[in-house]
Every structure is written in structure tokens, then in C-alpha cells.
Amino acid sequence: MEVMALALICGLAIWLQNYIYRKNAFRGLKYRCYLSQDQVFEGEEIELIEEIENRKWLPLPWFKSEITASRWLEFAGAQSQVTDRQRFVPSFFMLKSYQKVSRRWKVKCLRRGEYAVEQIVLVTTDLLGNLTLSQGAEAGAKVLVLPRPLEEDEIRVTPRSYTGDIIVRRSLIEDPFSIAGVREYSQFEPMNRIHWAATAREQKLMVYNNDSTSRQNVTIILNMQSREFEQFKTIDEEVMENAIRVCAGLFQSTLVSGMPLRFITNAATDDSRTTIATNEFWGPEHVESLWQLLARLRLKSTEDFPIFLSDNYHSITSTDIVIVTAYLSERILEFVYRKQAEGVRLRVILLGEPQAGLDVSGCDLLQLVPLELEKEAAV
Image 1 (cartoon, helix red, strand yellow):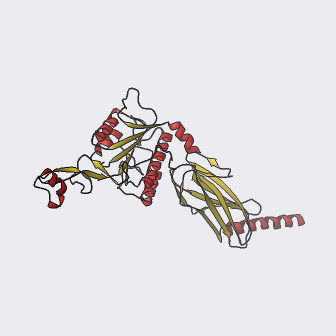
Image 2: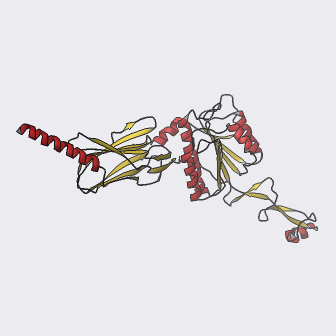
Image 3: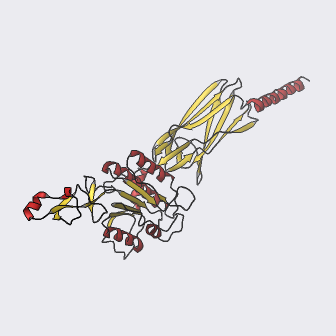
């Protein structure tokens, strides 16, 4: 009888503590998960902070949070499981009554993009480990990882003239501050254009001859196609990641040169087929907004690049153009030579080898080997 009574009491105690934990395990429990920064460059480290507060008398001897995040967020010291797109990180705690615990994870941002803590599941058990309880927690902590600008002396945007303007072949309005000489009066010039010393010397009315000038500005064009015959989704993704880093470095160099900047590409930040063409502007805020745009670019082209160049030919009116591309073709070179014939300074940054038999002698070409860029990016 005593044994039966003892077994009954033990069974009742086990049932009672199971009932108490089932009803109260997640009551008075506050969990928060957030990132220390919302914007960093790839390769930099941030912190993911977990805060758990047990606001009740019931202790939680075994508590676990299961964090699901992007595979490109690397948790230092964590025994995480990685799939093609996600990383699963377990985190274990022991909570006493009315106790608050916080944990900081070092997180390395491996690649550009917009990432978030996608899902959090909280798991706990009773004192004896007989009961397993789970509950979802609020996720959504986000970080925007900007592409790391490739800082090479050769990859820079430099002005042709440090006075701000350059001479062009023709313009609707002549620059009154740029004097190229004198010429004979044609009855259409105002009186303040008359060069009196030259008039006295030549014994006929002579006027100032002014040059046509234009403000120096640059358009950077990114080709999101990694190969000439490529439909939509990028095949050589690592090559295009390096091309994006090159563009980020070009954007950064304009802060030193002081040239207004415009960016266009046959890519999008979503699944639409619209291309990107930004307004022309200059300054740290503009460059940062372009870095953010690069961070969100999808690795898929929205339009065949030669067709894209043809469609935007007349809207590209900058004095300087830089094309960043993984391949060259005769149709791309046709755009290059036409713009050069109009007096535009155009440079091509090629990530790879030009096609055999392609004549690039008339092109200002900078060739970058993708493998070397990958090693540089990994540092």
C-alpha cells in the first residue's frame, strides 16, 4: 500500500508539474532579438543581440532559441547548419526565476544584399524533460550589406580638367568665360563682345571668339549579363559580384574627383523587367544611395545589353562614360566608337578576356582578371 501511495504521489507530482509548465512556461517571458547596425559593408562584423527575461517565479532549466537567417550571415562560434540559402543557429539558455539574460553573437556579413533574421522558434521543457513546448517569436531584424568598394588606383574616375568645365565641339550657347581668340564682327554680336585692342590693330571691328564648354560629369554603366548569349539569370554570379564591387569603387572615386555621377544598368532590384537609370547628382549622400542600390540588385538582366545601350544612346549625354562588363562584342564596341567620335571620353572595364579576333585597339580598355578580384574580395 505504501509503494502504491508513493507511486500515486509521484505520478500526481509529475502530472502537476507538467500541467504547470504547459500553462505557464511562456507566460511572463519576454524575448527580443535585434542587430547592432542596419547597414554595413560586406566583410564587416556586427552583433546580433538576444535578450530574454523571465518575469515569473517558474524557472526554465532548459531553454533554446532556434534562429533562421541567411547563409551569408556567419555566426562566430556557432555550430550552425547551412543550406543553399539559409543558416540555422541554435542558442541555449538556463533561466532562473525573475532573471534577465542577454547574449551577443559576432556576425560577419559575407556578401552584399539585404538580409534578415527570418524566423525564431523558442523551445523549452519541464523540470524532468518529459514535456517539450515551442512557440514562435517576433523576427525581422534586418541589415543591408553594401558591396565593398574595390579600391585600386586604376579603377578611378578622374576629371580631364580641374577647372570644372571642358571644351566641347559644339553647344547651343558659347561660354563667355572661355576665350579662344578673336574674329571679325558679324553684325550679330552685342557691343560688350567687341575686342577694342584688336579692332584698333586690324582697323575693323573684331569680337571675342568664345569656346563651347560643358560641365564634366560621368555615367557609369553596368552590364548585368555575364555572357553574350545569356537570358535573364546571370550564369557567372561571382564575376558579376566583382563587377558590382568595381562599380562601388568607381562611385567612391567621384567623391574625390568632384564629378556629378549617374548610374544605369540593365538590371533591377526586384523581379520586374524595368531597367535602372538614376538622376545625376554628386555628394556622399548620393554615393551612399547608389551603394544601397547596388546592394539590392538582383543577379539577372532585364534586357540584352547592346539593345539596352541602343535604347539609351541619346539619353546618355555625359562628358565621361565608364562601362563595366564581363564580355565585349562588336555591337558594344559600336556604341563605344560612336560616343568617342562625338568627343566623349569612354572607358571600358572588362572582367575577363576579350573575344578572339575582336579589334579593341581603338578602345580605352582596362582588363581585370576575375580570379584576382575574387582573391581581393576574400581578404
